[in-house]
Image 1 (cartoon, rainbow, N blue to C red):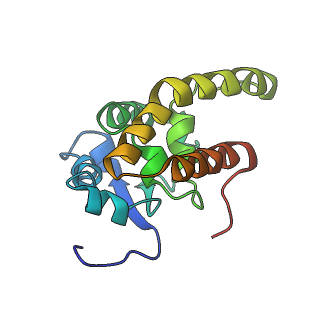
Image 2: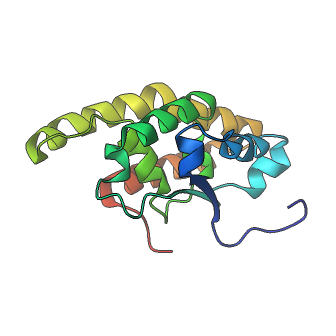
Length: 162
């Protein structure tokens, strides 16, 4: 994709076989390739989304499936840069976040526990990773603040219209 301008989200599809460990996860390489240079990272700024294929006939939400949760946790260990690269118009970021939250909570428990856990995830992991990439691509403080506000809006108001 060198030299291409990416207009629509570039969706990285993770297959059920990848999730269940039956094939080497090419998705990790796809995400990591975005870090090869500051120019490449910039070309993918808020242009990626992630989707999981092979679960259409499963009645559970993706974040309720233990194998998906494990895969996302391992992927996040290797690539915590979601806030910089994932579009705020899609549901991929929401899916990743929910896989890192406790599953099977009542609505009341979810309202009480998720904000605290999300705040912890953002402040200790994802915002530091985002800031690292922002420095890598030479974002101004104003641009970093705008991205941070966009992240907060995403998690409080939902995905923005495409």
